[in-house]
Amino acid sequence: MKNIPQHVAIIMDGNGRWAKKQGFTTRVRGHELGVEALRRAATNAAELGIRYLTVYAFSEENWQRPKVEVDALMNILMTSLSKELPVLQENQIRLHAIGNLDALPAKARAQLDATRAATAGNTRMVLTLALSYGSRQELTAAVQGLARRAANGELEPEAITEADIAQSLWTHDLPDPDLVIRTSGEQRISNFLLWQISYAELVFLPVLWPDFSKEDLVAALEQYSSRERRLGKTSEQLHA
Ligand code: IPE
Ligand code: IPE
Ligand code: MG
Image (cartoon, rainbow, N blue to C red; front, top):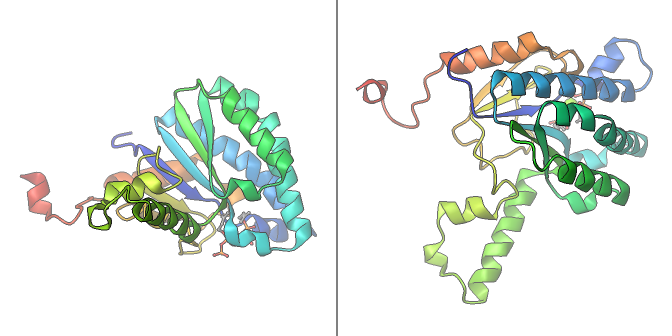
């Protein structure tokens, strides 16, 4: 396949509706099957040559869900991080995380740090989990950091550059996403990577996340490759 994006970000949506459609009485079964869909997506992405895959796993706003669902999600996170370690190693995938990670339960945080350390040497693809993530919260923290430096006389306000802002975000060591995929038919961003996706291509798919297949990923990549990213220029300029 030609023109593979370097960085793909996915809003993994539709687990609850999937569980309901299948007749399960709780939404949790959808989240459990969502982990399997993520395993497939990550291994397929690595095989296709994608270098960075960032997935929205839990938003800052998701803390407002019923406690039973939040607790179940945190348990799934913890068990999956240890269970999936062999898959990460076999596929040479380095695990990374962004978000307000201090808000996670201590055990989940410890498991996350352990999996990150264990996969630190893997070089084929970086899989970033956005956990307790909110783009406005990320930007607010970045502004606070820059304001602190300005107040300390370390930084001239007029000298603040776009690069300084990008460097102050939780994503400072990741390139900007080239492609954002959202499943479940919803067509919104839900507070995900607002600064970073300024020029990303957006692909919305009707499939519910637990059903996300290699064919869906390939279909999104084909849409991406058929688009012209003009970055403000004219088509003629790009072809000159
Ligand atoms: C996405 O699926 C997973 C999380 C937000 C944790 P949802 O749980 O949002 O499923 P729907 O959108 O209600 O179907
Ligand atoms: C966005 O999905 C967050 C994740 C996929 C983790 P939501 O289901 O929480 O988003 P809204 O509420 O439909 O916008
Ligand atoms: Mg949802």
